[in-house]
Amino acid sequence: MVLAIDIGNTTITVGGFMGGVLTFVHRLPSDRGMSDTACASGIRNIMLCENVNPDRVEDAILASVVPVLTDKVCKAVRSAAGVPTAVVSPETDTGLKIRNYDAGNLGSDRVVDAVAALAQWNPPLVIFDMGTATTMSVLDREGVFLGGMILPGLRLSVDALSARAAQLPDVEFTPPAGLIGTDTISCMQYGALYGAASAIEGIAQRVEENLGHSATVILTGGLSRHILPCLRRHVEYDEHLLLKGLHHIYLRNR
Image (cartoon, rainbow, N blue to C red; front, side, top):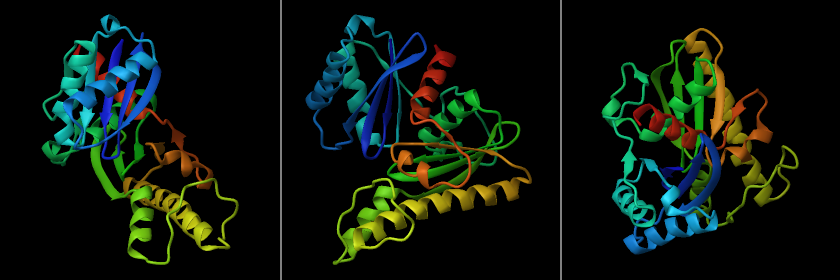
């Protein structure tokens, strides 16, 4: 078994690959104050939950956008499974071609997403990863990474709205029952969901105009499932794109 770990700003996602197949996914909070002991306990509990014998874990690979947690999680994996963890960095051989972008300042999550997308779809590609931030990455016809955008995430935007406007409540995301809200909560829900969907549609269209041809649009990330019902254009959806990209990079560097 190979453990693939994505350390995001909100959650630490742990996936287990057996024979190339993703067999489980669990999440832990990205608690920057978490002790080494608590982190190791979290990884160990995931393995217990899935009946994973530590002796069956061959390797681990990790991508992180929270540097303070990277070493902590590596130590936790070593403690729980007894294996080292490969950390995706600018020096990692990912096979991704990058043009006119500061690769040393490129988030490993976007690199890993691109690797996974190229393994499943023919370029050009436009990848939206909806987490704490929403990232958009563009790959041209040759599969070369050109760059993209970083937008405030869906949850972040709504939480900021609730925090800064005294009369607006906290809201949860549920499938929209219509387009026009009839109370404050539905107005906030619809505004967030359809606003994000319209941003994806509009940005994708502008990217295609910039490229001069159509592209495959891919949606991933923890919050992306809330947007799918609101989209008016076809997109490819893979909730676990990043974990699959980590496994591809692991196999490439094994």
